[in-house]
Image (cartoon, rainbow, N blue to C red; front, side, top):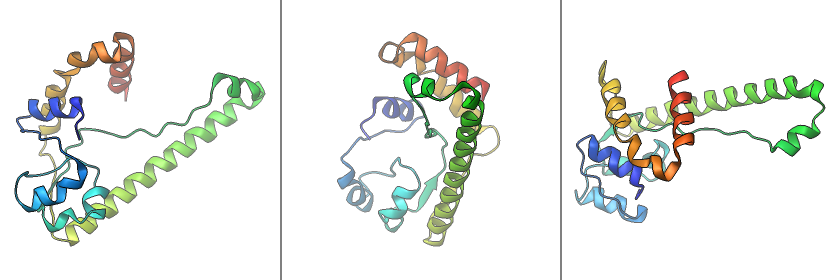
Length: 160
């Protein structure tokens, strides 16, 4: 995707990112104009990229978040004695959602293997190297994101 963060990250990792329209990706893989594509695992499965792409690299460079939220006015309409129960139900729902997403991803990876794709994972210690490189580009986006939000996000990542 033509996402400046992704382009900068992959460039920092030594790749030559080539943003393009999604509709062109299959044929670009087929013609060897590109070596790979960046997407969640369901994309190469659902779009049959396994026909023209033999490798799947599980880079873990992004984690989608599931956000469950209420406005403060909606939250304040809930009687205070129920706040803990509502929060507990939300926490349970998020945990179930995350577990389901992980199961689905594992199933799709298995299907891609069955279609002939070779799945690559990081060797011990390699993910930490990628994370260190990624940390090196955070500052390039601070102005767009805002210093306070950037720091809150980094603090959250460090604590989890």
